[in-house]
Length: 257
Image 1 (tube, rainbow, N blue to C red):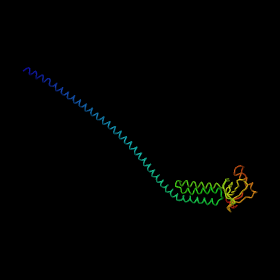
Image 2 (image 1 turned 180 degrees about the vertical axis):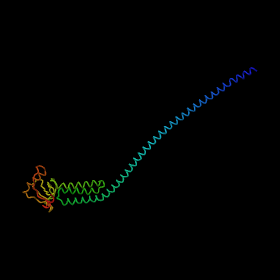
Image 3 (image 1 turned 60 degrees about the horizontal axis):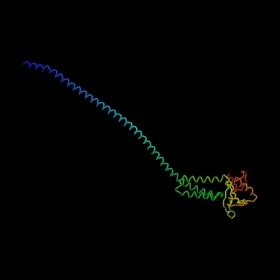
């Protein structure tokens, strides 16, 4: 009986200690679980923060790309608008060119015809060369490989060459029919006022008379003065006052001056 009481007392004495130890274990487990949960929560928070920062960075990058694309789109729209304006301008220029060509091409034909008439009615200064130039211009007008601008330039150039004949003294050789005979002669012209021919031996002189369209022999008394004029034209002597027969009428000569 006594032993049983002692054992019961021992059980009763150890029971509070066991209960206390169990509560500690439970508290420890709860604390550990709480710590673990807190760590997991913190990890999730950290992960969420990193994800949030990444999302913000991605959003900022996308916004920058959108701004860049918007600027580039506006740039392209401006280019397209300018190109459309340029296309419109070019189309208008093409239309204007077509209209201009309608007027320029007939003008060029008239200019060539007028040039031919001018040469035919002028003193026969280098007549074969000038006539050949007109024929070249006529042939050029029918060529598709020559631009209208180039055609017009060559026609103007031919006019400039013709104008030059009227403002200078020139000397050249030519074969002409004089007094019913083909002769190789030296020809001198002073502008469009005087046209004089000389035999190659220098012994005979003729001047062209425009009213009669013929070559007329010059009196031998004028040979010395004419020979001197040829020397001046050949630049073998210094220029001085010259005496030359007029190939045109005095009234025409006054009009030329």
